[in-house]
Structure formats: structure tokens, C-alpha cells
Image: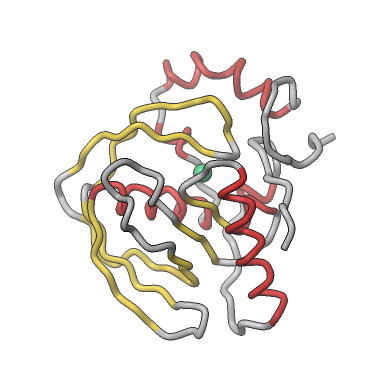
Length: 183
Ligand code: ZN
């Protein structure tokens, strides 16, 4: 098991729509294991494959470190598709391991229904709400090349521009392994 460097804002793969997984080979199993180790080391609650530089529709979630969700089981989500969104939205503060130290309230649907495959490529459909729905939407976006900062207002984007540039140039401290800056 190894810790993988996490891609940061500015890395091109974060803006790419990731490719479908068609078979689960040993390499994929090892990737998922490494993703869990990498996420936990960075105290994250979700991680998408392109956040460790891999162009695959895979994300993992473990919200058990969130207060009130201690019993939540870790999940591996492959080839997800959001097939339903509640009309009702809510606001929750979001952050991202690829955009360290920026946390903003983001509005999203409160509840979503998602179809996905597990590590045996069996199909599942689940409806989730609260923190689960929130993390799922954030990670699902990653696989489409979308980042939570894309939802900021123009004023907020201006406010965070310097911080984002600093992340891009690695002109900041981060206490987990990250990729080298894009030249
Ligand atoms: Zn993220």
C-alpha cells in the first residue's frame, strides 16, 4: 500500500472528464486501496481517481470521521451516474484536498439518486441525503472535470484568485504528498 501524491488546482487532469471503467484488474484494486490510504492520510472524506492522477471513473467516500456519521461505511463508487436530484437545495461548507485551505458554502440539491458499480462491477442504485449526498456530488463533479470553486460568484472568484494562484504554484504549505507544480 502506498500514499499517492494528490493533484492540486492547476493540474490538467482535474479538468478532464474521466474514462469509464470496463474491467477491475489487480491494478484497479491496488489503486482503490492506495486511494483509501491517501485519503485517510490527508484527513479527507472523499477522493476521486483524477485527484491521484488516474483517468478513471472511480471515487471513494468515508464520512465516518464526520460528527454524527461515525457508523457510515466506506464506499467505492465506479462509473457513477446521478439520475435524480431533489428540487430542494441546501448550503454546506465544502473544501477539497486538491484546493487546500479554501472552504466555502456551496448550494446543491439536498438529495440525489445515483447508479453506480461496485468493485465487482455489480450495479446499485441508492438515494442519499445530507453529508452523503454532498460528498457524492462533489466527487461526482471531479469525475466530470468540475471543481467546487466553479460554483463561486464572480466576486468570490476574485476574492480567492490569489489563494488559487498560490496553490497552482505550490506557494503554500500542505501536510500530505502532492504533485509537482505544472510548468
Ligand atoms: Zn474535491
